[in-house]
Length: 307
Image 1 (cartoon, rainbow, N blue to C red):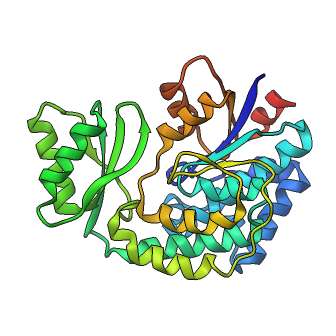
Image 2: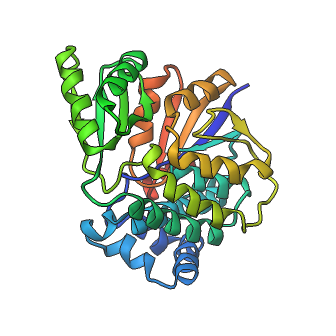
């Protein structure tokens, strides 16, 4: 029996104008943006629809903006197609979109939480102290050895296992740069620094995790209509009492995206629907697993494909 997974994008997928077409065409989408504006007390809708690249790049804006654009698409999709997911997953920030879809979190709680999360992550490490780099065509074992050699008393570790041959590392800028040089010395020449505002998903994010814990402990969690494959474990979770612990652990732990897609495929998923801005996850899924269908839904054209 065929199974469907809804997958939700994370940071880096944002662009000015995201969600505007749907908000102009569907009241249910417009309502999501209005709810975000009310919950945050700022015009997040303006940042999504007409914001500058610099404004959208600020982590405290990026995270609620992508979540809101994703949930707006989801609400239209639910209304227009009746399509249901057997499994849900999201990349880093996208896990919050998946949790809203499952019913574990309300949208208003999620949008406020990710704005706080973005602020905490930004504040955890002074600008310039941390860095992230994409390491291509390199296996997990070799990379772990390189990180160990490069650390020299600093932090550097795998942050995202995105797809075969695409792993991102994060940590102190000096250690990340040493890792790039060591990798090149070992013949792994495809290694490059990423333009990011903080070193996400590594031990340097501990202050952010501690502050986030104080926020998520206060939230109510609802029954989950579908399991969410968590970034931390790459296993389906349908127990809402575990959500809080998984979200806190996620801040300092690597995103096991490749492993999450492999897990869903092994459980019978043969149709992946990426819901929200960009096509980043669609590209990763195609590199991780063959013989599955991958659809991206972010605008009117995507909605029409699934109607």
